Length: 336
Image 1 (tube, rainbow, N blue to C red):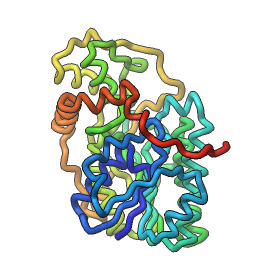
Image 2: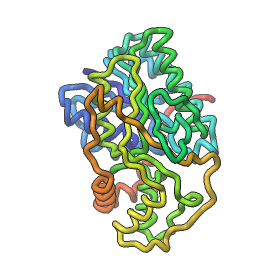
Image 3: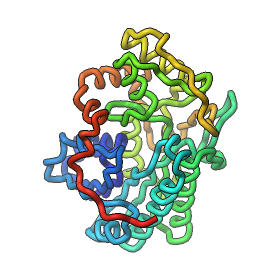
């Protein structure tokens, strides 16, 4: 199989590429990544010299580049590439529309034109909006996004659906809960709190810290995607969740306890506009139809994640210093 992976130098994409190289060493993977601030070539040093792996520095908004790559002959497209940080979407929504919506449509059109056999859209539970104290998101929950980021992902999901209904493109959509694990960019909650705790800096917690998220280890996510690519029926949507609901404050306290740091480091900050209160995933469909089960308990997964950051200070320091950005080439300017 030949896979085109978009955004493969990011957190989840790089885990997916490393997972697939281990499991299917005879498959070919092309990683198309624009290397924005969250794309880190350091994440794929272990596979960069593999004969079955190729990196292409290109932007999914570049129609000619996308058409050229897909036209080389691709069996499946696994589409991770996205602007993904909610706070950044509040500050600058436009780039989220350009990349997440327009970029997805460009990929879909190339897939339709060149007869790609499967297009997997990697989405998020945030497209469903927020939950009350009870219940979980199912694949039939109406989309009700509350941030520019989640609205852009919901829009992309609808475009993927439209290409299925209009053109018969064999697509799948997966919607995952919050991922965690090694190599996560340190603007996200868990690595941010680890970073601050290690430096004895205040740990900023939005509002009362009682926002609830379901946490999924990134390796469990990759195993689920592998099953979708190889077994799912075209057109199906799958929720992927870890069944690990925790408040943000619980997460922060668990990190401080593991690092033997005082809770006095916690600092409450003004809540984020439109901050969803609770997410919870019902993953029974993928469990029943594809036989997927998460293998990481949250406690062990969090501990191993913290231990990875402790064992890899150079990875974090290259991000903090900006060194990881300095040697990358510059893409041609793409007008808004």
